Structures are given as C-alpha cells and as structure tokens.
Image 1 (cartoon, rainbow, N blue to C red):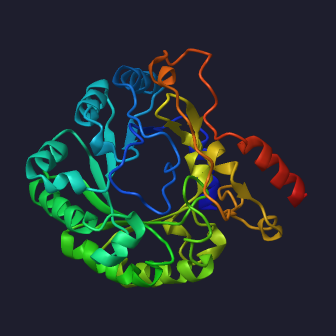
Image 2 (cartoon, one colour):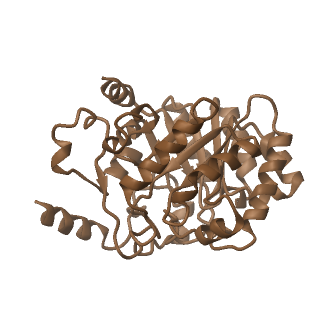
Length: 337
C-alpha cells in the first residue's frame, strides 16, 4: 500500500525544515495555530544557525512560516541565505497583504523562492474578514496576489492555502474559482488543528467539510493541484492520494521563534487520538488519527527575550509547550483509557 511506502520514505531522516520566523501578524485569524504566542520576531543570527545546522543534516527544503513571515524584516535575507546554503526548495506561506506594495512583491518573488502560498479564507471580503478579523485584509491580499502573479519569474509555483471553517465550508467552490481566476493553480485545503485559537466553535462538522472538499476536488482536479491537510484518511477513502498524512511529517522538523525544535509528526501526535475504527484501518501506519478540539483557546505561550538570543545548543532553553499542557494531555489520555 502506498501509505506504507510513504511511511518508510518519511522515516529515512530529516528532509524538510519549517521555520517560524516570527509570531507577529497583521491579521487576527479565529483559528490561528500560533495566535496565543508572544508576538516577537526570531533572532536572525540564530535562525541562520538553524538553517546551517539542518542543511548539514541533509535537509534541502525549507518553509518560512509565522505569524506573518513577510513582517519579519529579515525574511528576504533569510531566503537568500537558505539558497546560498544549498536549499533547493524554499517556500513562504503568507497572507499576501504586504505584497499589495508592488515593490515588495517584486522583491519577494525574485528572492530565490521556489513556491509561494497565499492564505485566503473566503472568496469575498465579508467571509475573509470573518476569518481573519481585519476588514480591509481581502482587498490587500487580492492586490498582493495579482502583483506576485504578474511579477513572478518562470518556475515559481504559486498557490492558495485555505483553512476550512464554519463560515467558509459552503464556499470552497467559490474559493477554487477565485484561485483559478487569480492564476493560482494549486490549492491546499487545511482542516483545523487544536493549537492556538482554534476551537470547536469555529470548526465545521468534519464529515460535511470533507464532502464539500471532495466536491471541489472532483470539479477542478483536471486543472488544479490539490493537497488536503490534517484530515484522517477514513473521511476520503476514494481520494486518499490527495491527503497528506501526519506520519509523512516524520521527515519534517519545526523551529519555533524561540529556537526550540520539534519533529513535526511527534508534535502533532500529542494532539491526536486513536478511535476503535483505527485498529483495522490500512492507513493507520501513516495517519495520525483524530483531532479533538477544545472549547477554549490554548493557554498563552510566553517567550522570554533571553530565549531568542541563546545559542541553539544551549541546554537552558525551556520546553516549547504552553503552561499546563502536559498535565492536560495526561488527564485526557487517562480519561480515554
């Protein structure tokens, strides 16, 4: 089975680095995975050290994330530094608002990126604002996308990243139409994870959302590239080739703003639960199981200034989980047993 083969490939060592370059953001998304963390930029020297460390381990892909990565003034320099170290695939995921300034858009698309993903969470200003908390964001994001599409060099892959919520689940078809009209032939459909501000209050019914995603994929699969993220395989048994299983992330490592690093699959697994139907599932070797969203946001992650500047090998760095998380996780696991 292909999921078993994927699991084997993902277990061969680190292949991709996901770097949170900042927790600063000019949106206020209802579901933001880092929305309860101290809004600070990472330290540029330490981030360069991280890039060098993981490149020496054989990693050749890096994804610069946030927060909103374009708000870190070091972003373009970090992209160029990564390419100089030998990273062959470099992605930025952005809300695109700063790209409404044409000069910045030109600098970003010509910085050495190989792919650029724009986060769009509604096909119109009202729906997008309901999700991102800023009335003018849609106009600026769309302007930024148009600039980047027009100015992008040949070979730069451009796409749209959509987080599925109660307010946009019925509009996924319209979002696909918008992506195509804007010149974005790649669409990521992300289901919510229980991090940051994401709670069950903003999450749609998973089965219904999966059905809506399937309808969009079927309508556009001959023209667009699709990836479905954070969804158990049992919700799309006939579309499993589009799903990105958690255990595929065994080869990915995430660097937080305070320089803590985690294996991405292990980090996500702490919030996954197995259900009885998982026991006989042929995809269990690759699928992490189910997320259970809470009723309240994740507690704040407080980042001290000294954590930003300590050398990456300094053992005094604190563990990058919110206060009380381990205890809540243990209590939940005890309750499930």
